[in-house]
Length: 143
Image (cartoon, rainbow, N blue to C red):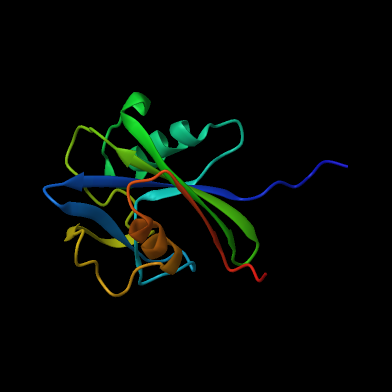
């Protein structure tokens, strides 16, 4: 019997001049109204790096060479199901960030990394607090 697998997500940190790019989720039914890093699900047959490049292009219009992505860490979390989320840092990109999927995001802004907004997806906030990396967090599991 084939294993159904674990939903896998990817999140990309873009930082410039002490500010990080955040999107406010909307219309998805999943953490709507909260800020998060751009990203999404890794699709079948796609690597984490390929998913990061695709998601950034689809969500923000930013173009990233996969060689310009740096591993930060991973979150293994118990949410609605068992999930894995990879966090990457974009060292360089081209283009200007824009809302390219208005059905999934209603706000895009460069926020002070030292003073993040209150309404941020909880596991994303914890990942950002974990620092430069590499790190691994397990969230929602009981010992």
